[in-house]
Length: 149
Image 1 (cartoon, rainbow, N blue to C red):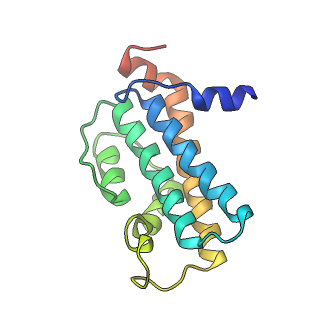
Image 2 (spheres, rainbow, N blue to C red):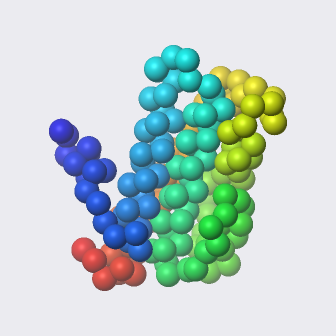
């Protein structure tokens, strides 16, 4: 195992933002690698991309000790962060575009088929959100707010 995979597999308590980031990374890896498997719907990969972004945003909310509802609405989560003083870059605001993949893509016929281009866009957005959250939490917000090092 590489040091990167060790870091991902180390478990933390559910109130620790690092555990939420682990879950975000897991969903992101599924979204990235799923296209290589073959026979996987882009809709399913977009669901994992959305979940990665959602869990990364919730990790930041936990790190900043901001209560949040258990919703899939990325706009709502971004608004909670901004309302509590967190500046959100434009690339991360794009997460609003992938909220739709949280529910409707999981069921046949509810949404038009997702194209490769849409999948790539969702993956790019989710990657930006996860990396942004990692950067902020890596600067110590997560450790300060949880009392863990």
